[in-house]
Image (cartoon, rainbow, N blue to C red; front, top):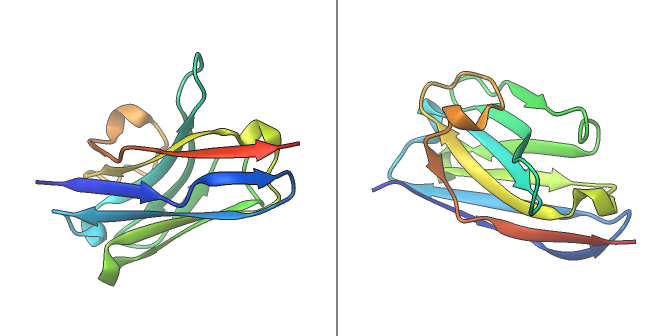
Length: 124
């Protein structure tokens, strides 16, 4: 059984930092694309960062590029999202997900396995 466990969310002031972690069991990160997504109630889910398990290629949405960094430790089957210079508009539930085809896109429909989400709240 594949499970993804996201953690590390919390409440932080604008300008602060948080690091999210996503630990996976039942799959090998080396074979998957890993994405971080976020969702605010009433809005569509937004893909913010992607990393390729096979080659480490990364992609970011324009809203977080330059502030967020995705990384992974394949030996630990864990991905990370370092979030710096946080803004109130970054407030959302953050999810990690795994794409078995490693498509390289941040289209949520391509991600098969999802974690439970972790709340990030940025106060102004």
